[in-house]
Structures are given as structure tokens and as C-alpha cells.
Amino acid sequence: MNGLTGAAPGSLRVCKVWTSYWIYAPLALLLAALVFTGCANFSPMESFATVSQDVKQQTNYQVKWGVLSAPQLQSFLSQPLTVNRAVQLALLNNRRLQSGFEQLGIAQANLVEVGLLPNPSLHASTHFPLGDADSGKVGHTLSVEMDLVAILLSPLRTSIQRADVEKSGLRIKAEIIDLIIQAQCAFYRLQANQRLVKITRQIVLAAKAAYDFAQNLYQAGNIPELDLLLHASAYDRAKLSLSQSEIDLSNSQEQLNRYLGLWGGQVEWTIADTPITIPEESAPLEHLEQTAVSNSIDLGLLKQDMIAVRKKLGLTKSSAIFPAFDVGLEFEQDEGHQKVGPEFGFGLPIFNRRQGDKARLQSTLKALGQAHYSLAVDIRSISRTIRNRLLSARRTVQFYQEQLIPTHEKILQEMQLQYNAMQIGAIRLLQAKQQEVKIRRSYIQAYYNYQVARSEMQQILYGRLPTLETTNALLERGVASPTILKHGGH
Image (cartoon, rainbow, N blue to C red; front, top):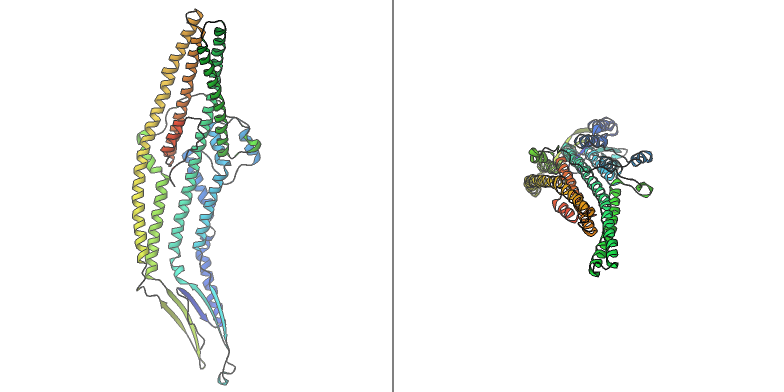
């Protein structure tokens, strides 16, 4: 007897004589090609194009897969960088971001892999006679096996992997948004440190003038040595502050270099000297919470997790019903008679019905639902906090512009008139000049705080959640801090 015995669980076995194989095997292979050709040809650039289009519509910045060529990079750096040009350059030339794009290709490759049919197994055997009665009766068997359960459940596995592709696209978008805000804040920090260096140099000049004048007075015997030492100490502190400001300026420039992906001779660039202005707020502050929740990428990632878990739960339930399903075709030859017919085998889900897997997935789904609700609450709360910080920072800058700076400018003018009339000495005039310069330094710090608050507002409207603790620490240290903003979410 030549036939089919011992098929693997969950497999499809076709058994026939050599001539019948050429009928069944091509049909099976053709079916596999027709069902899964579309999935195998799926390109990751299609998903990237969707992400790129979303970013363009939301932020007005362009992203592409692949860094700038040398002429394109030179064209960017040939002119002073504005904040928008700096952010655009970071998006086009940052290699870490390009590395993230490749993750989308990995997810697409996994999608192609899970959508392919399992390779069939081809088995051939020859049976030789052992006794004289069977002399000359040599039998041949050819069988093709394929995992039937994998074929039946392939659509569910493919849908699960598609959810992972969607998550990869959201992660890439999150990385893009993070880089936009990081490069933007780094540019503002560099710009503020440049202004602080200029202001500090003015403080040094004023302190030096006061010290030189005090020396003349001391040599003439008009002031005690203590006054001279106080002016010398103020001059030394001003010089030390200038040295630290110059170091902070260099550090902030190198931080921006990292975001821009520049090194070597490429770092010889400049930034545009733009005036300090308070633009009209275009952010919909009255609908901030709703917009932040609606655009949240982090909530979108949790939703994709829940979709994937639901699909896995459906897959688990289906595989529990059909743990094994064998279908075969058996050919039998006995005493000159040939018989052929189908063969079926079922696994009996008596003991293991994947109860643990189903309970685990159900608990995971409930946990994700609670996390989704909690994150939505956090987003609303942080949105209100950022809105309050932005409004407060804006009022502070306006107070400097409308009250403090004009008042001290007028004070300095009046003291200059009194000095010209010999009603006050040069020491008091120089001290007033130092005070006015210090107020301008605080004004630069306040304006930087406002720019960071605006960037945070943009970030949460784009769909990403800032880490307020890190930002608070940064603002407390001042613009000279080299601390890199870290952003929340996945």
C-alpha cells in the first residue's frame, strides 16, 4: 500500500502518483501567488509619503527620506540662518531622524513577511518489493504539505502587523515634531546668548569706566581705598561674567550643530540678527484642550495598541477553536486496485483552549483603556499650564517693553543731564548705566522664556507632550544652560 500517513499538525498534504502531482501542485502555487502578490509589493515610501504630507500640512516644514547633497547644504549655509531655515535644515540633514525613517521600512518588511504563505514542503518516496510475490512492483509517492491553519489565520495576522505599521508612522511623526521643537529652542537659546554677550560686554565697559574713574579719584585722595576695591571687584565680576557668557554662546552653537547634523568646515555659519518682537498669537487658546487631545500622537499610539490587542484577542479565540486542522489526499494501491480520497484531521480543544492568553489580552486591553483616559487628562492639564505660562511670559515681556525699559532709559537721560550740570558725579552716572544694561539682560531672559513657551504651545498643538519638569529646570537656569529639552510621549 502506498499512501499518506503521519501528517504534521495544521498542515495540508496532497498525495498522488507522479503524474497527478503536476495537476495539484501548480494550482496551489498559483493560488499563493494570486492571494499575496499585492502585499509582497507594498512599498514603505507610501506610508512615508503620508507622514510627510501630514507634517507639511501641520507645520509647513518639509521632510524627505535622504539627506541633503553637498551643494544643497552649502546653499543653506551661505546665508544667515533664521529660525525657520534652521529647523528646515535640521529636518533635511539630521541623521538620527533618517535612522528613524528606516524603522518604517522594517515595519513594512515585517508586514510583507507575515502576509506571505508558508513555503510548501515537497516529499517523494519510492517503495521496493521485499518478497517474490511482489517482484517488480515498485511504488512511488509524491506529497506536498502546507500549513493550513497559517493560511486561514493569515488575514488576522496581517491586520495586526498593519497596526504596527501605523504605529511606526506615528512614531516617526513624533520624532519629527520633537526635532522641530528641539531645533527651534536651540536656535532661540543661541540667539539669546548672542544678545547676552553683547549686553555683558557693555556691562564690562561700564564697570571698567567706573573703575578707571575711581582710580583717578583715589589717587587724588577723594575716595577711600575701600571704594576703589569695590569698583575693582565689580569690574572683575563683569569680566568673569563675560567669559562665562562667551562659553555659553559656544555651547549653544554646538548644540544647534548637533541638531543640524553639521561638523568640520560646515559649522562656519551665522544666524540672522532679528529684532525682539511679540507676534500676535495665532494659536486657538480658547479651544486649546480640544485641539491638543484631537491632535495627540501619544493618544494615537495608545489607540493603535488597543487595535492590535483586539485583533490579537480575535486571533487567539480563532486559534483556540482550530488548534490543528489537517487536510490531505490519500492514494492507495492494493492488489492491482487503486483508491484515492480525502483525509481530514482535527485537533480537539479539550485541555488547552488558550484561556491564559485570552485573559492576559483582555486585561491588557483594559489597562490600555485606562492609560488612554489618564493621558487625555494629563494632556488637558498640561495644555492649561502651558497656556498660562505663555500668557504670563507674554505679559512679562510687554511689561519690560512698555514700563521697565522706557522708565530706566528716562532715568539714565535725567542723570546724564544732572551730570552735565555737575549735580551728580560720574560714579552715579556709570552705576545708572550698569543698572540699565542689567535690566536689558533680564529682558532678554524674559523674551527667551516667552519663545520657549510659544514652542511648547506649538508642540502640544502638533500632537506632542512636553516634559514640564525639564522645561522648568531649563528656565530656572536661564538661557545659558546647555540642557537639551526632553519630550514626553512614546
